[in-house]
Structure formats: C-alpha cells, structure tokens
Length: 476
Figure (cartoon, rainbow, N blue to C red):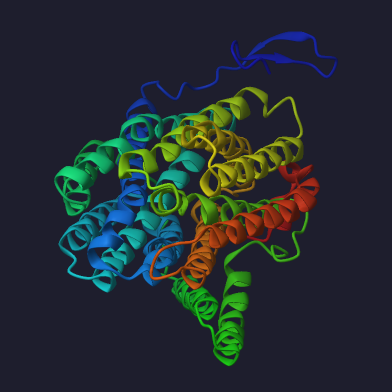
C-alpha cells in the first residue's frame, strides 16, 4: 500500500483501483489524543533531563555519593511496578483512571524531592515519581496500540521522540541555570504545574477513545512486579558490597526472587531470546542497560573529571535527545523497506561507537566540546534501535490484551535502566576517592556497556520474523 496515497497494490506490485484511506493521526478522532500524549511526554522529558543534570549539585548539597546510582535506580524499580499495575488495570478499567492517578502521584513525588532534607528522602520522592511515570507510560503506549492503526504507529514513534526536542534543547540548560543561581530544589518544585496542565488537556481526548472491558481484578501480576522490583533491588545492593559473602549472598537471593517473576511478566522465552517478541524484549533490556548505564554518569564525569559547570555537564543530554529523535524519524521512513534486525544492529553498533568516543573526551585532555558530537552519535543509535524494537512489541499486541503485552516491552526498558544505572553507580562508588568519582570507574562502566551491546547485536538476528509471530506463539 502506498503510504501517502493509500492506494492498494496487487501481488505483482501494480496499483489497483481499490483505494484504502489511512486515518490521519491529526484527524477529528485522533488529533486531540495525539496532542495530549505528546504534551504528557514533554512534561516527563523535562523532568528526566533536568534531574540528571542537577544530580551532581544535589550530591554536593546533601552528600552521599554512594546513593548516586540509587537516585535513578529507585525511580526505575518503582517504575516497573507502576508499568505492570497500570498495564493490567488498563485492560480491565480503561486508561483514564490510571492516567489521573499517575499524574497526581508524579506531582507529589516532585514535591517530596524539592523539600527533601537528605538523600534517602529524595530517593523516596523518586520512588513516587517512578511509580507514577510507569503508570503514565503504560497509558501512553496502550493508547498508541489501541487507538492508532498499525500504519500510523511508526509516525507516532517518531513524534513521541520529537517531543523530547524542546526539553532536550532547553531542559538541561535551564536546570543547570536554576541549580547554579536559585537552587537545585526548584528544579523539582518548578515542574509541579506541568503534569497537572498535561492532565487537564489529555483526559478529555483520552476518554473519547477509552474502552472499559470489565472483569475481576488480577493481582498476580502486581505481586510479580513487586517481587521483580525487590529482587532487582537485592541484586543491585549486592554490587555495592565489598565483602564477598555479602555480594554472593545478596546476589543469589536477588536472582532467586527476580528470575521467576520476570519469567511470568514477559513473553515466554525472553531469557533465551526466543525468536520474535521475546527477543525484542530481551534486546530492549540489553540496549537500555548499555545506554543509560553510561549516560546517567556523563554529567558526573564532566563535573568531577573535567571540572565543568552544571550547564555544560547537561548539554550532552541535549545532543542525544535531538539525534534520538532523528533516528526515530529514520525508522519511520525505512521500517517497511529494511529488515528490523538490520536497523537494530546498525543502531547498537552506533551506540557502542558513541560510548567509546564520549569516554575518550571524559577521561583525557581532548577538547571538552567534543563530548557533544560524541554523545549525539549515541543518541542516533538509540533512535534507530529502540524505536524499531518497540514497533516489534506493538505489532505483537493482541486485541484485548494490549496493556499487558505493551507493558512487557516497557518493563524490559525499565529493568534495563535500573540494572544499568544501579550497577554503574556501584562501580563508580567503589572506585571513587574521598567521595569524588575517578576515571577508572567510568572506564569500567563504558567497557561493560560495550560488552552488553555486543551480546545484543548477537541476538538481534532473531528479530527477522518478529512481525509474523502469532498471538498464540507470543504467549502474552
């Protein structure tokens, strides 16, 4: 089918007289929903980029470098629980109520973070934000799967990535300026109105396309999400211990709790990277371990090793946000012409090159401005790989179970972020000297990320037939 005209073609590639109209994402039914979802993503993007930018200032004020990785790890662990709970409830009660609860909890988390007297309290606020963000992610992705036709989904993927452009351009710079001249607390407090505005604009259009299936509440997935978060927390806690017995003991218990619950929440065969959607979820985990396990520490590296200001330390995040968007638009233009395994592998290789280039700038005397094009390369790779993998998951979602299926992809994303940042934070903390990060720590984190990317490239070939996987075979 011709993407622009909607004209159908026969098996010989000849245009037929039949014309099939593809519904516009800006049309009467979907236009307001598209705007509402994009505004919600913009609010979340501002928060994510701003918090990553001001964390060095926050640690300088509150102390506790050993908590650094937990600032994001706690967010992502709670995020996993929110994703699964909302994904399950959406299929039963619809999207509107989980969305509203998520917005309110997110605002409360910002308030706690802005008033936090210590790092543990700040982490508590991040837990509330993470749980809420998970609910909002489930709603947004389920809305894409339920309300938009398959032909429109690549365009939606590109637009959601584009929603990071303005936050990426101004978010880190504004956050750095606020932290320097007003105080890091106002980075949290100043964002409270934005999610509330997004709720007022989004709920009416979301209600117009919402479907309530009804049925009994199934708390088994919520229980498994709690177990998964607890097991991941134990595993991450193990990496922060120097005693061998504590490391092995906590790690073993964490894996015993994590693996069974993970298996029940994801498509069968995910741990073995079985062909199709299971490989997509496994690849998302490896991808986000590698990318976010390094990106979260770039502002810290530039601050402690290259002695840059908070504004400069946050600019690489701007560069990657822009090129991530560019990569997503490339996927929109090419996803029907090239094998998805090829797009993913190109993206993964590009990320690896970008990580090594960025590491070189952070730990040597190279001109520090080179960190911007270096990390921009990495963002381009993320746009190619992540967008393609999420399209595989969206295409595999069966009607009536979109929330559960799509939440599996987002769960893989969040678990990867938690593992990457948590393990990376432990490495940076263990190798630090007098609460100051060292070049050795960043080198180890970068090399670990590159190894993980190599594993992802190795299994990406199993994505070739992902679009043809049947609902029964997906097992979700």
